[in-house]
Each structure stands twice: as structure tokens, then as C-alpha cells.
Length: 481
Image (cartoon, rainbow, N blue to C red; front, side, top):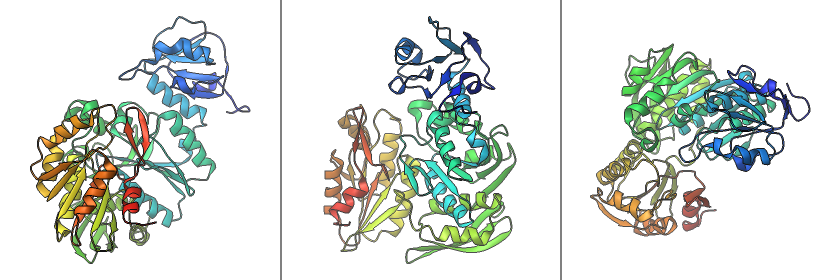
């Protein structure tokens, strides 16, 4: 498909339902949906967003060197136009073609759900690597393959970057890609044209209502992904209400704590920082011992194990892969101070996520449970009081601080949270200072939970990503190198 460093436009739009206005077949060297990335030889996609409409910038991109435009309406220009019903779908199709359909040359696994996607991806990657499969991960913590880490701003990258990554992975002999597929990615057609060998459904709870408006819309988007056009086999948590609805829509494997599931666990015991349980995968049984704590992590282990079994990995290899995972970056990641106080860093940023981590921490805490958390700005405001209620249920003391305030006034965000916070609390908006204050309150038997950012290495403040890491701040305060 490639001739030198460019691709002919006719090759890029192969399979795309479109009307072509113009007779040129220009050389394309770059795909872009952002005016700031347009270079000489670019094919530009006019996307409609919540704030901007790319169609309004067509003259600028022409001036910057675009050789063709993908648009949903005819524009006042003599430049080659590819008119399509949906430019987001077109972008996915064209990006796949431009990067030599590399995704089709690897095995793809999708993870869909409100919580647990990142942890499940880490565990599954470890199992598959143990089985001798060169495996890549795409998700919230970035992109990982062949000992490389590529930072990404989104859980599921936009199609142009995603397919560029697929090509790099294939060139590096990656065999299987495990990727988190967000509800936004499904709604915005980012994974259009991809077919997944397996898709996991982890769970469903409130998040992102700023975008989806209602829980029903949010549920419908997640559920819509599970069809045979997108997925060959589904691995579904049937302990979840939406999971029960998804199960059986297509060839499906069930997992959960119910002994009637295809894959289940029983006889769970926790002692000295280790959790032991019996796992059954399609009738094959084994004992698992893991350092990953909490019921939510048992679900993550089970979903990854069930998927690995569907992919043909023997249960002995699955157990070895699970047991080698000692921690997951930014997920229940625990540091211990010299006096024995525990500091836990976790990504929990939804009511259900907070319930999962805090109920576990409360059950193992011998002293005070001190919780530092906040809520993102310009996002789902409806979950703020719900998150406050969960924290009030478990915390002895709460510190309300900045998460990613974005363009919203941090004081307003804090006020929304505090309005439903019934435990003892204090507002310290500077997150670094809040962390220092939280640690100053802790004694030897206490746990300090620092929630909301996990492994993120920045804070979003007024359009800028300011470098910030909970782990680095805690490590500095503990004098850990």
C-alpha cells in the first residue's frame, strides 16, 4: 500500500461510503483532525465536537498544506473533498487503511466497563506474556509493548494515533493487543472497523453523565459494543446487573462468584497480606495466591483468567501469571512509612470505585482511615455528592483537595463535595499540601487513602497539564527513592 512515505488518497478511502468531489488522487503524508497538526500533504477530517466544528476551519487547513478534506457537507473550495455521512467513522476507516490494516494482523482483546479495566489489562498481559505471547496494552496508564511506554492523554486513543500504534506494534512482532475501550470511544466511533477476538465486560456504575446525560444512555452505549460485528467471544461479569443483560446477546462466557458461572471463585481467605482462593475455569480448578487485595481485585483476576482460558492458555500458566503480579501502578498501590502507617494510592474516582477501595481498606484498617480525594472539574457533577456519601460512610477523617479542576473553580467543586460530607473533614485545595497534611495526621496503625489520580502524572488546570504525581509526592514525603 505504501509508496515511499505517502499513500494515495484512493487507497486511504478504500471501503469508505463517500462522494468524492474533485478528480485529484494526491499523495497523503499525514492524517489530521486537529488544525495544529496539519502539515504539507495532510488529509484533514472535519469533526464536530462539543465546543468546535472542524468544518469551520477548512480554509486554515488548506493554507497549512492539506491536500484533501473529509467532510459531512460540501465546502466552498476547489480542493478535493470526500463527503461522508459521519467523519468520525470515516476517520477510523481511513486511519486503518493508511496504517496498512495492521490491527487485522494481531489478536485484539477489548475491556469494557466503568471500573477495573486497567487492572484487568495488567493481569491479562502478565498471563499472556507468561504463555509466550508478545502482548501490548493500551489504556489509562498509557501504551506498553516491548519494554516501551508511550504516554497517552486518553484511555482509548483517537483512531489516527491508535492505528499508528497498531502499526508500530506489528512491526515489533506484537501478537496480542489488550486494550481498554471506554464508553466515549464507543460513542465516538474510535474503534469502528476493529474486530475483537474477545471482549470483557467488567461492571457498570455511574460516571461520565456530563457526556451521556443519563445512566440509560451510558448503559446503552456500553451494551451496544457487544455484538458479533465487533466481537467474536464475550467474557461477562454476570454478578453485574448490566452484565446479565449483555450475557447471551452473542457467544458469551460468564464469570462471577456464583458457582453456576462458567468461571468462578470460592473459598476466599486473606492472611498476612495474601489472598488465597479456589478458581474454576470451565471445570478446571486451581488454588490461587495473590498479593492483590480486595474483592474488586478478585473480579479483575477472574475476568483476566477467564479470557486467557478462552484464548487457550492452560490454567497452570494462568495461575503463574496471576501470582507474579505484585501490584498495579496507581491501583491500591501501597507504601509503608517507617512507623507502620500505610499510604494507599488509587485511581478510584466514581462512587462505585470509592466503595470498592474504601470498604476493603476499612476492613483491614486497625486505626484511623484518612481519605484524601476530590472530583474532576467540567465533568459529571451528579457524582460529587454520591462520592462524598461513600467517603463519609468509611472515613474517620476526609481531606477534600484538587483532582483535575480543569476550567472549573476548585472552590465550587469542593463546596459541592462538602455539602454531603458528614464525617470530620478539612478542605486543602493544593494537593501536595493536602497530602503532607494527611500524612501528618497518621499514626502507626492508620491508613491514608489518596484517591482519584492513581498513576496520572499531571493535573489539568485551565487548559494546561501541570506535572504532578501522587506517588512522587508521597515518596518524597517518606524519603523513598
